[in-house]
Length: 84
Ligand SMILES: [Zn+2]
Picture (cartoon, protein in one colour):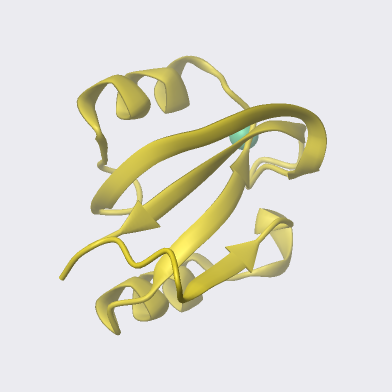
């Protein structure tokens, strides 16, 4: 599978979605645009281009203050693409 920017599912409040739901969408081949707080783990994932947490490729789209809610409940400051 690959990144498909013509068919992106936005998940801007990560607290509203179960991780299983995200996993399912990734397994279905969807490309997600997710909001995250750029902490240590996220920074490492972006450097690697892979998120162990999501089990998926990850790539920074843009840095943007208050662009959503991170899975941990903190205000998000980056948007990233995730895909399998
Ligand atoms: Zn977080």
